Image 1: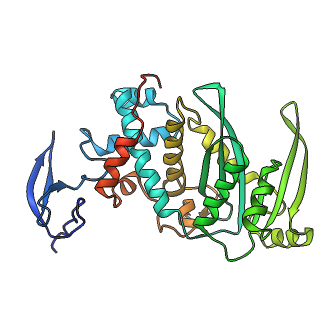
Image 2 (image 1 turned 90 degrees about the vertical axis):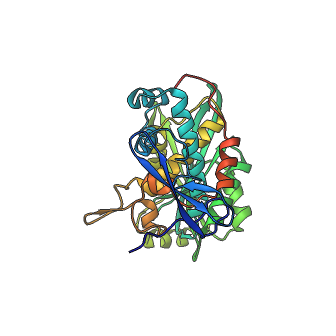
Image 3 (image 1 turned 90 degrees about the horizontal axis):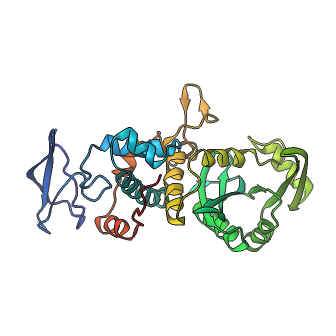
Amino acid sequence: MLQKLPSCPFCGKHRVVRHGFSKLKRSRRRRYRCRPCGRSFCTTTGSVYHRLQCSQNKFDMACALSMEGTNKSGIARLLKVTWNTVARWLSRAAAAAKHFNDKKLKDFHVQEVQADEIRTFVGSKSRPTWIIVAIAVGSRLWPSLVLGRRTYRNIRTLFTDLFTRAQMSEVPLITTDGYNRYTLALKHLLKGACLYGQVVKTRRKDRVVAVDRKVLIGTERAMAAALENSEDSEKLNTSFIERLNLTIRRSPAHAREGEHLKAHLDLLQCYYNFIRPHGALKFGREIRTPAMQAGLVTKPLTFRQIFTAVLFWAWICSSFRSHLRPVSNNG
């Protein structure tokens, strides 16, 4: 059987011929030439692995270690590379992950949604910021996030992005904490076409001493019927979004610059949805990822599959040029 030749990453055409090899340190890599545009390329051209100067496995390992909470200095020591190299790799990986998220996180079914905010900081604790996230409870999919101030505008941006990506065939059940901006945003966006409740926890000495559940959009009867039909919730709760918050906090949920934190969250979102099997999604011997449960993919993906997905050369070049370059040697 003849091997299928790749298409040209510059012009997208398929009139490609073999064009020798590129010499690597311990092996060689096949090169190709596009007849219409005359440019030559290899299998890594147009991807994050282009001109990497190291093995692809080492690049993937740096991303995996970052997702498990290892800082850049620790990754540099483990992989025996410089801090700036790790920072440059993670910037490339985050740009590709964001592109992959935008392309794949769409057309999923939503029946129950939970949203919450995480307080973190950028640079120092005197500069607090908020990570506002939403989760589709049935699939545990994390489709949307907003990084910024805890304002009505950002809450509305979160739900606008979520409802644009999702398919809602029935009235959704939405649960949040007691922050009043959620009510205003949902009334404006959905015009009351949802069931919305709040879970307000009273704490004393860092312990929850009381939990108050309120229905703000919809009737008590409709809320009770929705909870009875839910496969995950017997009563109003925010346990699923709080578990996602814990996952985010386990990774470095702060950074010196807002652009670095946003890039890390884009990579973490891709890792959480498409690569990392979720313990609550175990069916027999199979443990699914949230993207599998939502029907977006059929098997867990790897960093290699995500980073070698179809990316146009013009896009990847502009992303690398505009992405913030590291300026410090501190992890």
